[in-house]
Length: 274
Image 1 (cartoon, helix red, strand yellow):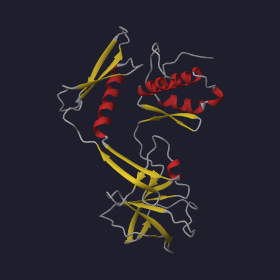
Image 2 (cartoon, helix red, strand yellow; image 1 turned 90 degrees about the vertical axis):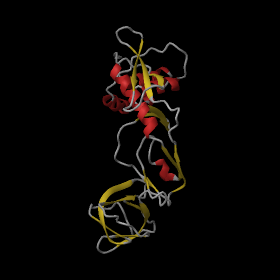
Image 3 (cartoon, rainbow, N blue to C red; image 1 turned 135 degrees about the vertical axis):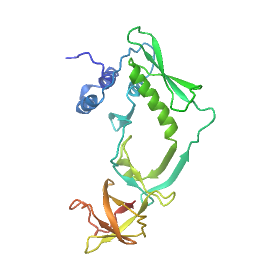
Image 4 (cartoon, rainbow, N blue to C red; image 1 turned 60 degrees about the vertical axis):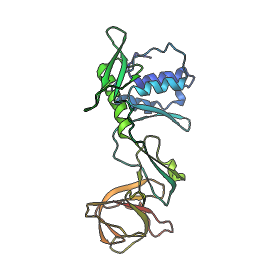
């Protein structure tokens, strides 16, 4: 039985159904789990002509999300802290590394003015996020559809400003089938000799003491040190604590799962050391 809701996730599901996608083709358990994690509201009525995709992205914008499609499924990536990489990439499974840095400009916006709907008057209102030390003389105005809470609008303004001004490094590379493991929004680790992002190589074999003998000479750099390994399926194990008994030997202090790696095979597993 349909019930009224202010949860933006169920607004997404309703919009997909209105667009002609039957419930049998929607992963409803996924949307239910996602609805339980989103605590903000979305209160909006679409009166202007727009596309379904633009309407979906407007809903996602109210909770720092972004819509994407994988296969025939719709998914939402929410920008939130993440500390568990799902894979790692280095020179042996990726090429064409590019690192771009966007430097601040004198005419950059120094504040964000968030426009929302006041729930009492039903009219537009605004709240401004001004970072510490900024005069706030050149704010950027942004309208957040469906937002009727002043605190929620301020948080979205703060997130938008900080994301644009703190995340200025863009890294891109080309990968093979390993690139199919992470989904949009997942965390990955990149180890590259230049510009000295960790130390990477291949495991040659595991000796009788259980140490990993690798192709590259490693620098402990005072420690503590950590090691990660890429499995045959492209996923990542680690990081695990370790020491260096030799320049190209890694002694594991964190035990690996039994049967996860077979270093006697012809395929040599990639290793990342920090």
